[in-house]
Length: 119
Image: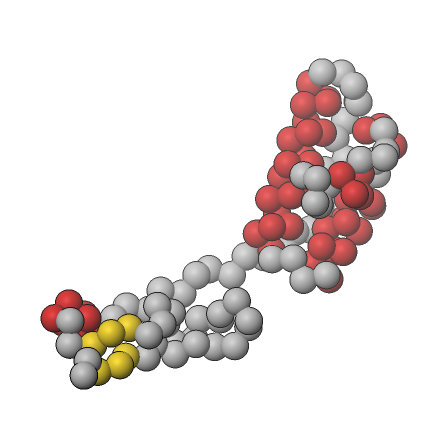
């Protein structure tokens, strides 16, 4: 909340927050490279705050309506072949990376599953 919501909405009174500001905030989060799940989670927290404010009669209605949120891409699962599993299980190879082909790493490049034969 303090990293994403407070900088944008902290100084504003709840009744001063507008739907257009929320949509611009979501777009800004996407444009600055936040993960779609982070943007959606932050939006969900803001929407919960505004729903509670409606229930407590602090504001008449929530402005979190008709907000376009980023899509989350489904995770791709790469399953090891039986040969790869047996090789790992037998201890005949050491895994030098526990990432799968096509999975982005924290630096953005695509990693490959590498094995190193035991000496």
